[in-house]
Length: 294
Image 1 (tube, rainbow, N blue to C red):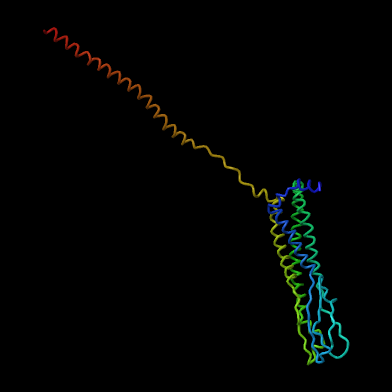
Image 2 (image 1 turned 30 degrees about the vertical axis):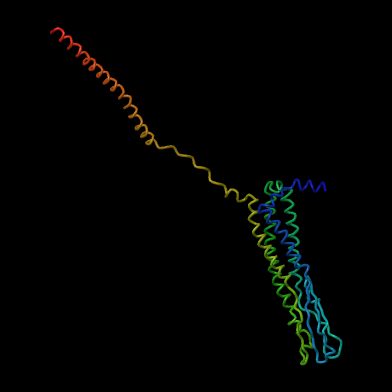
């Protein structure tokens, strides 16, 4: 327990919140669903043969088949309606190659996803060191994307053939007693194929997941980094010389005008003071003249 606690404490589980780790976790889960729904399948269908002589009839002929769908090895016994022992008949077709290929890809995808998740959580720094980890991850992801495409398409075709070979209406044609007049052959129960249909759906969903994850793994390689850098900021260009000169031209005359205006104002003020002084003496002299006249 101490080792487990140390591993959990040292793990970087935040990577599961980003697309790189989250999609890898989905790949791990969907791979389990894909190979388990196909590899654990077993089905059965039933037929009935009703002969003229009711004592020879068999109203419940059950045929069982399962993964890996080597149907040519599946047999059943049917009455001949002639008073003799029942005849042994075999189904037609061997579809084990496509089914086993699909399950194999699912198992290996499950194992690789689990290993990749462990590296993401416990050795993310070494994974990104020198870009070796992302490059390997990207190559393996490309291979699995292609393999999911091939295996899912092959299994979809194989499943359609399995459905045709296990159709009770067609299997009835293999029974010789059904070709004779007076005998009645019919299907009683069709096989349930929902599990196999689900496996094909999970196969193509894995294809979408692995194909979509290519972009996020490719970004980790750093190959696209030089193309995603922002352009350097442009430096501000200095103002043209003519503008500076014009600004100086607007400032200097105003300053000189103020400097020239103050002395003139002072001189005028002094002149006014002098005139005022002369005017101020006039009443005094006028008073003196009046006093002398008296």
